[in-house]
Length: 196
Image (cartoon, rainbow, N blue to C red; front, side, top):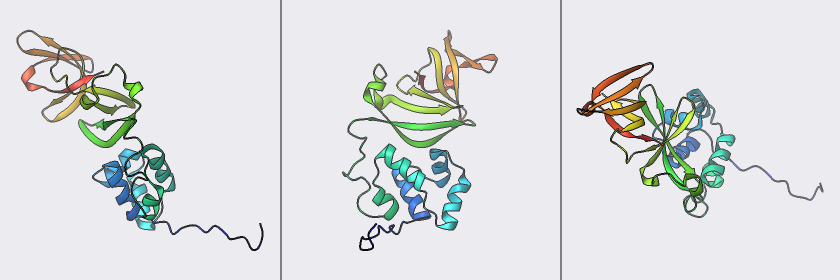
């Protein structure tokens, strides 16, 4: 390199809460705990970013590649959130709400984007949600909120679970729990949707 050639100096990257607040905004997460769940990282990692004013470059790159977010906006606070004013995925891909089912609760993990061809044969996207459970990602059709036969996402007394169900005579339903089957009045079970 010539002595007269200019050096490429690094920008003054933001760090800590400035970055995580922007990540909350772009992912739709409402808390740092949700943000940790969304990216699959320990909550303590985010706390370390805050304490040391660190810049999470890998997470920033992942967010840029998957959601089309401007790195200048995310890392420097400059320009628009999206370089073209909207997510690069928004016109081509289908956006589905994404949740994680754990300990009887659904945790909002933001959105997932899919190629329309991947969803061919599926119900309308406005009735679809993606649920992560025990390492699997399942599509749930929320328009099917009456149990007939199959696997359903259900809510019983505030606890959410995935169970096989079968409608029975007399407004009853049979629900599989582990190795046993329980019969309940269908009015005691809220069917969120059917697994596709």
